[in-house]
Length: 426
Image (cartoon, rainbow, N blue to C red; front, top):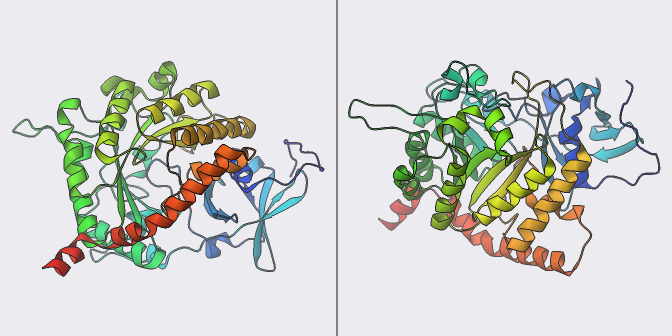
């Protein structure tokens, strides 16, 4: 195939994080010689659809997990080609002929099993990296409005009930989380949901946040590990719901406010703009950061749609709220209203992630402390190689390395289910 991305043959090899960013932005073709259907994880179109790529691991001092776009039209024109030789997978950059060794993580055996209620486990939760992602409710109500108020880049409304169960039973979730823990060494279960409410006869309002409580409590009791919850912010008079979730065992909250530019936010996230507003995400970040501690809450933002200066301001604003910036490179997901929008330029994304590293370092945020690998985003600890080493970056790296060592007993303790601790003390 022809290549529209010229690259000089004398260019140096890409660093692992640079390859990661290039793959997110350009996608990857798969050579006919590959056997990814047998050797790798299935392509899962669940939740918002961002995991609809092929999972690979790029060797590095800390291996980098990447969910690479392979089915979108832009990926079919990519200069990167996955190939195999003598059983070894590698990514070839057709612009300069450079080969990059990668590994293809095998599909977990539990993906092909059913729960005790005869539900396919892969329709309950999927691994994206080494963490388990589970959408816990029926489809986001923004998809039910007429005209639709769904976020323009999202496909949750098309996936829930089709590629995954529309309603997850607590027992099914526990069984899947146990399988992921025991067979895939998963230590992080991430629950997410869209915009939800229910007006009951007693006029009580049930938000998506409240729906997470029984799932959090069950996983904390029977499975253990770290637990995260992502949901649209609740009104300030319902902040006690965050307190209740923390008491139930939640370790982390994430808030997808998506875009810093107010016009872009309103245009591409009409439901969020009309029902809660951009400010609600930062108020919730500030509140939960005070409750859990700095760095244990994240603000999620999409890079590559709005001007990168706006994205940089958003990163700073998230950190100033006491939260941790999670930056997702825009992916024109099939089936979304933005599927024809071009992905961003890799060089622009490298500038964004350089800023991300600088911001986290200045704020002293600990990064890469827990052994949790997320394949959908460039993780902050991976971005250090985008900068030239200096004293400040060396000290920051040493601090994070020391914290990783100190965190090991804590991680081991968190792995234990609360139920087993209670039984031990009885």
